[in-house]
Picture 1 (tube, helix red, strand yellow):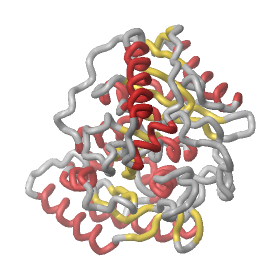
Picture 2 (cartoon, rainbow, N blue to C red; picture 1 turned 180 degrees about the vertical axis):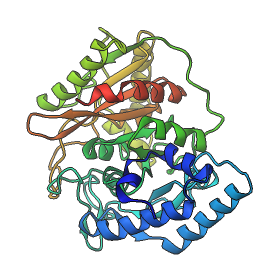
Picture 3 (cartoon, rainbow, N blue to C red; picture 1 turned 45 degrees about the horizontal axis):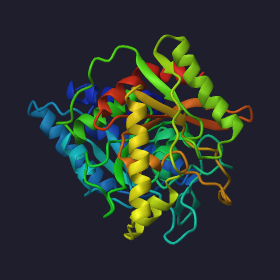
Length: 382
């Protein structure tokens, strides 16, 4: 096995490089991940199940392939899998084909609950690695916690209204929702896109290359133009949260990594349209709202390369729930519109609460979005 500290310091790309060049085996890496998770997850509750036998068998297959001279882009990388999708989903099967090894299932909320920003296990709720008093967010709760705690470098999720981006923001990691339709949707409405949680933009880019190898590369764009909005025109965003995200974006601009454009971003609240589409009860009002927001976004993207917002309008809540607050207020518009979106750690409020910087790109410019994240992530979080 690897030293725990060494393992936790490695990105997925670094793990694959070590395995492909015979410096460690996939078996050693996976044994380390399983042992750490067995030891530490009792106090975190990120996982609902560990798949030790199947993980070791798959790691042996990776090692056999490497011994035959096969170079796998993610050779031996342990991943965590959102319990509600399982290892047989399209994205997870493509990750396995790239050399990843699923080690277990991660927590999601209980069915039928009135709020989705938490994770449930038979040992109690999933805790946030940054502060156990906070919810980790959801619904990809355990995936975010597992990545933030260093148990795995990559965890899969799904995002129907913000379910990858919200827990990533609250656990201080990166969460990426690709353009809707790039991977098969996980619901009939086409809102729920597969997605990923990682510690680095480079690992998110490696994920995208593995699951969508035919997606177009990032164009050379020079300095990207960014339109900032703390509310999208309708959200009740806390001043401290908006200020923290704005300061992160301002640091990026001050470093010469982007330019800010004075372009308002005014959308209609997507709540009624999202609810109607999810319920399978479309009507003219829903269609009009979606069309109006699509037109507004098209106008913004004629002047800006990216839109930036806080990821959530409020900081992490406790394990008693969000109350009347809508954690998805700034994310679910882009499940309706289908634009690719990600969240980067942006620092903390004056009270020490984590905030995400939410970035949205034009349709199918997923690589451009990830390239921006790679360039900006060290500057975004102080």
